[in-house]
Length: 386
Ligand SMILES: Cc1ncc(COP(=O)(O)O)c(C=O)c1O
Image (cartoon, rainbow, N blue to C red; front, side, top):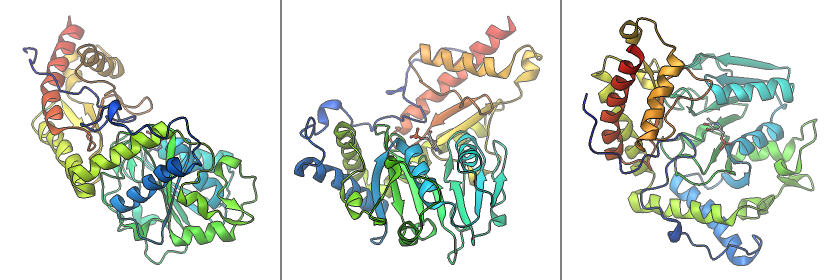
């Protein structure tokens, strides 16, 4: 097979940190807040603006509250679990590495006893109809490492007694969200908007706020997770007075990303961009006998972290190689050509490719990438056969 002539304009297809928006340039960031106190008027106004623009773009109901918290999505989700869980029993859904990580924290660190875990293997989703909404429910919107997402939020009971805690980091801004179904939602800037890591956002429903105000878990809460002052929620945190010092460079970068979202047409445009990027891959997979989706059910396939497995190639290679090595050789080759960086599957996931299709990726770059994957595949087959 001939080597393709045209390379993607941008080789950044990592599933986190993800590609910057196509208009991004470091010189375009508003750096006037740098080296100033984050409590000073103008820097604090920038932090608050990043909260209000997020609320506006994501169409978050007015009675929900949003905060910027430390340590990226992990920090935000740990904060949610450590401050809210333990009030009642918990049902946890997990089907890939990150969801399974939350199970580990709830079982081994928080040591909660009244838990039910609904797990599924890579490629599958647990049975959503088994969940008891009288209990708290912990789940991931989009499984970044398996490319399996929940198809929608219709399975969540509107009359629930427990809270729903959703790690939405690789789905938010790319998938539509019915806010009435989510009580706690977390994400980080480094994913769908291509922002910087280390800052998490957390969104609370009125019922979650009520739980925060009325419940204190029996374990100590580290300062980094503390949202309360004198026993009640500290309202200032939701107005830009962060728990500790944020990076104002990261805030400037996030504001730049949000402004780009307005320019391209808002949330609907972001969802459409991710959908049409991932459809390019779907069409290719349909006609290509040696590649398949890790996600078994079409309805649960992610439109951001698209995970693929090689298939039917054992015959070609007559069992000569291991699949991890094969996938690694392909990704290494594409990286050395500066065609695609970081498209190997996650370290705990089945070997294959993971191609980020979120909205900061241009469709033309996915289209241009595909012939290169084909080229790398056949070159690698040859090298292993010889
Ligand atoms: C579903 C999910 N949860 C949590 C994380 C951790 O995010 P962070 O590294 O931003 O804390 C990731 C990162 O890829 C993720 O995909």
